[in-house]
Image 1: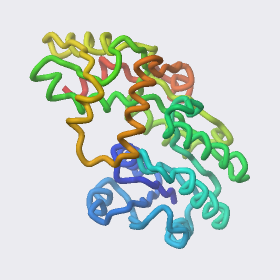
Image 2 (image 1 turned 180 degrees about the vertical axis):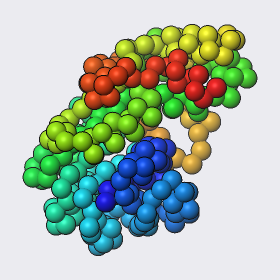
Image 3 (image 1 turned 90 degrees about the vertical axis):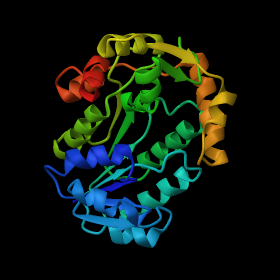
Length: 279
């Protein structure tokens, strides 16, 4: 049995959809409203609770072979949650702990990256066989701009359109997870997962233009304007997103696709293939 935490988001659901075809999967979520949708993806059992509640986690991880841990996004307690779930994993003698981290967690100015680095450090000291996955930004993240792209021909972002990024298709990430959890020789490893060579959002917009057969341009919006359009986020999340955008504006976030090619034993999905699949 594999337990996936943080299972209700787009990452968890995509991974579960891939895993449930070959393994028994259970899910841990905070809200019971997600039970039906997860069951429809092949989840055998859904545990509802708080990741900071050790007793609930102890119950959820009984008879579990592997934990795939996705922390709630932009959570100020990620380190504390990491400590609790690692304690539980040790107590229930989990065979393999897989942590969903982020590309370049070493970047201290982006606090949500830095917290993941602290969790990685605790994993090393846990004594549990581990795999740490550090994915680049998802291609799917750009779908938040889909209406603007298709209707107005504008890919609008709150940082420099010239900054370079590497991206990964979430479908490729799910395949990596399936490989790491079901094939030997992936324990005690850290994998940076980038699917593309570094590219700017200007280049991304050009690809959209070719596939959609209409002009699409990249455009920078001010952070103040971005904040005015955002609802439902905590001040902690807003503050950390602003820090991230300021970092992206100067430095971008780039990686190398060789590790992903090696794990998949094929070329990673390109932006062209991704856009053609969703359009």
